[in-house]
Image (tube, rainbow, N blue to C red; front, top):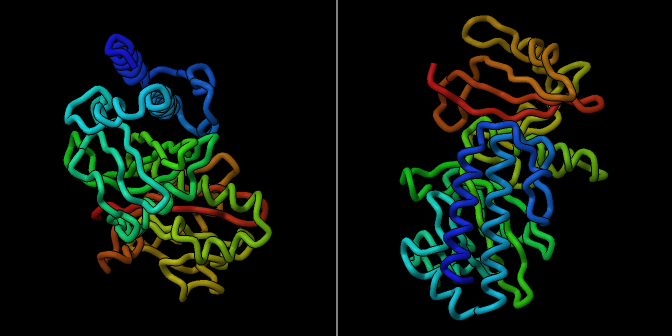
Length: 295
């Protein structure tokens, strides 16, 4: 891709980031790749569209000039990093082949590397990648803040078998919503969703773990973080204020999703902390995930 074209792309993406506070639909700015979920709020929809746009531009450049594009991808501060958004390339064995934000990672095998939640994220990216593109969420160091933060990446399987991706960083509220969205997709498409919830690593993200309860009696059906609760009713559980939070959650939960605030034991710290959980009711169950803050 010519430098002038790359600079035009940069300007386009910066405009998209600036517009992220506006009510912009993903459908209006999607460059032709697969849409992100329609549940995305307008701000994140623009981020997702920008990630797809940058990825598709990098793919076009790579197909036209593989060697030149890989050289650009190995140049720190080069054309394929725009703030916290950058292009990366991995192979099917989870070995990094190019990384615009940190070229020093090239050649590193991440197949056994977990994120701060214990999730094997590069095998997850490999699994989600397809010729039409796919998405996965995980935690990774943000090059702007230097902190490990939730990230959502778009990945495309290229004709030569490599996988090219671009991601954007999330706050905790959007991160747990994506966990619930993934669980809802499983509920709608799989014959035994409960078994998947209990075994799939996508649903055990450290503090941000999935939980599923039966609505009528609040019996726990699935939670990898607290398997001892499965089969028991949560109806009488209370937090430090005496709130019966499971009963309140059942009253709040609907098909559109609602937030529940309560005190609950953080399995990572062993202390009761303030928990904020996103709950969605579907058929006879309530599906949720949350994150913690100190009381």
